[in-house]
Length: 485
Image 1 (cartoon, rainbow, N blue to C red):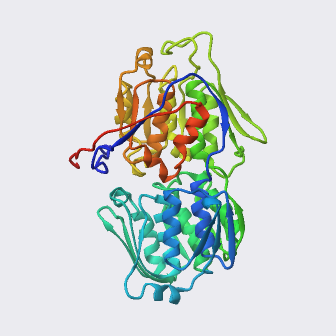
Image 2 (image 1 turned 30 degrees about the vertical axis):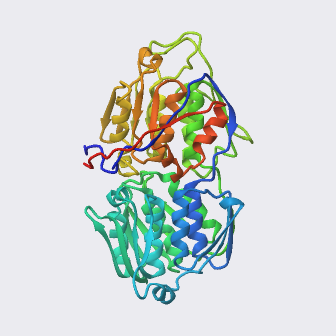
Image 3 (image 1 turned 90 degrees about the vertical axis):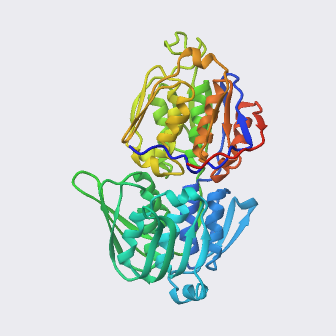
């Protein structure tokens, strides 16, 4: 089992935030647009013929780096309503000669920050489009594997593609005249974004392409999301499964045409607000998300139902309710604490909500075993090892496994304590937002680098204040250097 990754921390952040406990949470909220849908829609619209109008789009670091990168190949993207809608004039499929003229003197440099969707989707799309490019990001991005995607593309293109960091990690250097083949193979075990990127690239190449899947496919809902989104722009996909029901291959054809697409609220972001009701008690409605949303992470609300919460889905959205109980379990802080039970759950299809559930599990009446998420070690940070490090600072018992972790509940004494605990976020937005839930029940929780939430949810802290009706406590200190290990 790999050690937890800590080398993306270079100094102690100057700002920290504490969420203030204060009883049950009641209210409703609509998170911003889905990052996953926004970046997929941007790829399809950018390489479409004609103009697309995207409404409900996310404004965040991850979408900004995608927009800035696409602008460098001549895609016009005009923001409306502060970027919550976008008008995209597409470049219209493969124009390899034009693309190569753009990068004739030197490769087009694209800065991706730490956006996995952006670098994976662009790597596939730009090899199909043609031209010379170099995609790079922050140091942590240069530790995130992309070799399976590079290996899949390499025999497909006229040209070269290479990931230049050790372990076939970014930066990625591309010199391509487009795709020449009609079939390729890709591993399904590390990230569904590899397959999604290849699927979206095929219509750019104006080819009928078959993609064979090697091994089990993680995060299948995201593959279905990609297929549905492509269909809105004219891309046609066929998903084939083997006798055991596993995805074995995908066929793609068609060309992208301009379209009008509405982006759903982000279901991963919604998980924090549903979890707020589970942890603190109360009732929270997330508006405009339904059971049949294209994002698999809406299933997180059903996981909370397994833990004892009340689940309600209406035309308004999905509501989670968790009221106080009359007889507290042994580890409950008080008789007014909401009841939660430990569960054993497979989360491979909703792995972005593992950190959320891990925090909720600290307040259950027994251990929670999370399975099927070995790939979480290769995201913005090691979302198993580094998560365990931070939760243990609370005195929690956390067992790491090859495919996940087991979280044991906190003692009543620890939940009643307000002794200061400082939690590192590892520049991971989901660490910060998940740790915010701790402050709903426990005093003294200080979260470092809260601004990292701008990666996908810049207004998270303000929205949480609005929901709870309580201001957070913000503080700062002079930074001091720490050794990079």
